Image (cartoon, rainbow over all chains, first blue to last red; front, side, top):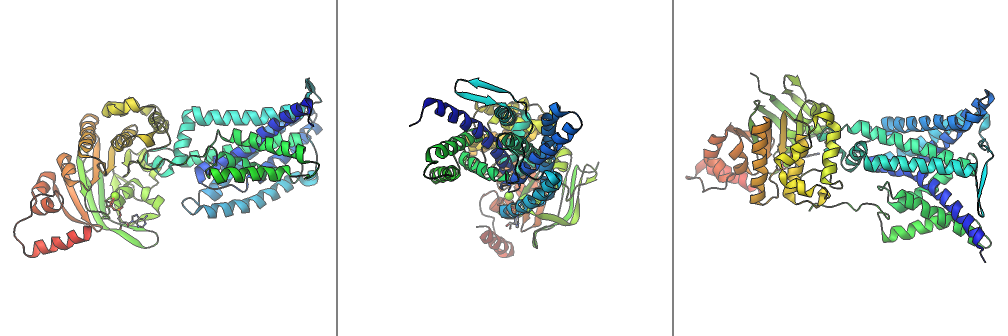
Length: 302
Length: 261
Ligand SMILES: Nc1ncnc2c1ncn2[C@@H]1O[C@H](COP(=O)(O)OP(=O)(O)OP(=O)(O)O)[C@@H](O)[C@H]1O
Ligand SMILES: [Mg+2]
């Protein structure tokens, strides 16, 4: 029924999409760790970044910088993503610190609509479907054809994941951020700059969302409903465990594979089932491991 | 010379209207060890947290009186700012980063203090931790966790170190080891110590001066040796022989005793 060439292509595409999902979900995990809340505005940060890149790169193209347009546009989006994350921490997360998590969740829902409005305002007459202008390269690896959209997605999503995971696990700054995530109260008693590190975490989550968004839009094209993919990526976060940072890679890849495979194999009788399959997988995992695959079950007092 | 820390008649209220400290004054001279003793719920922790500013994070605040440290008013300041001034609070219940290894705990706190922090300091006073460097702190024994908690505070080169019930839940032998470390770092680092304890015997062994608080008020104070000699203190805090005689005093203490248990 399946020939090996098709399988190779699906495997490759699943991996690319999986990496993108992982990078999209990363922002949820980073915010959850420091603020114990799901940032429902994350999809809007992604949306905003996607359109910022589109607008910036077309602006640059109209000024004779077409070849640099995409790269510079991505850079602008990264800055916007970081700044948005920081702004959310200052205006929403900080005042609500110490309140029940639902308060923050509700506030981020409000921020979602505000940021979506900002994205529309930034896009103006470009608030439609479009695609980034990428060079027309393509490389054949056996049956698999890798084109510029794949390369952009892999580099942006993979690079974001690698950079943030390394920062988190292996640098002093990362260790300090983990300490603040575990116990902000204790951390401030020991003099850790809790406010700055919390703000930085939100900023990095926004940055990751922006870069992942551009990776996603390279593949799927730019569209006003692109934020729905980010909700799907939330499944990858929950699957991995919301407080695990490195686990998100496994969560994302699992989501990518299940989604692509079930879309491919179920296409003929259950079209569009792929998205649902991802959530069914998530539910099954959460039934067995309520904290997700890599979520820490807190060490209780010995 | 004015004391390093002066707490003057403070009132502390938790949100919304829970009055916990009802006019407390203490004074901590530089290079001394001062003990704050008292039963469960007396307000020892609240006092220490009011000084460190952490009471803010519990939605509490100093509503009357003032706190002066090294000549500066510090009541109701942010805990981060207060710690920058050299006032470090080691919370009760061994507050360490359980998910991180011992080494990572040290690294995280050292990050905050940059070149100032010398990781070796932790191992110098609590050599036992060296062998446990790579274990997750959550899996250390209670004593080791307490040692790590105090060690982390040392990284900040504190001028005033506030320890909240370092003996809580530890076996007597381990308490002894922890207190040896405290005594040594007091002598060798010249750090001033404010110690909250229910274990009055242990605290009065190393303290110069002590305050006893009950129900948010100071009920007795004096040099450590005088408190050690005091009959009421002996009976109710040191668990020695019953104070002789009966009368008013015994009846009053009896009522108090009933309240604590
Ligand atoms: N965040 C808070 N909100 C309201 N009340 C509080 C809060 N924290 C403590 N209290 C109350 O303040 C009083 C003093 O508590 P505190 O923790 O300071 O006592 P303590 O002397 O440290 O006791 P222990 O020896 O048990 O540690 C208690 O009655 C407690 O219930
Ligand atoms: Mg206490």
